[in-house]
Length: 242
Image (tube, rainbow, N blue to C red):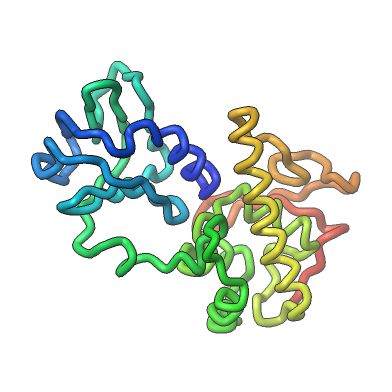
């Protein structure tokens, strides 16, 4: 599943299409696309894992889900779920969900929770965290209304770097540790993004998908019953708050 840094990296790849007229929009998705034809792509924004295409008459939200993919000036041998064709070049989405927003993005999204936004507000995130005191921190980190853009890679890496066990109860974690965790979420997200921009891949992990963590301790792997996602952690380094 793409995470916030992946979507921001994709946005940068799409910048040449900004300000260009759409000759033809389409795809097998449920959203009608005729309203986009002949319109200028005014801006491209991101909110966490959402990619936003802004036009004068509306905004398209693209969500890649678990298996979605977007290609620039390339096509697969399968049908496109959403696409934008320009005089020069095209954006092709596969297994993506396109939705026309009913309101402007600013009326829907709160960039104070977006971990890679210049408007990210740590104090606001701490306020939201207080309402999740009874939940485990691994679950809270994946709540997109609080940590917008966090996926499994960022979750595992940030918890390891903050030395917090993923099954810790959020309300039991000391305030200083919460601050440390939020900082590590942002720091790793930026590292993730920088690596994509420079090498095209993200493979700098201290615990995620590792047999041994960066400190040399053995990595424990658990499959979460609700989400079926794997968590990676060090019993030696990461303290359990319960």
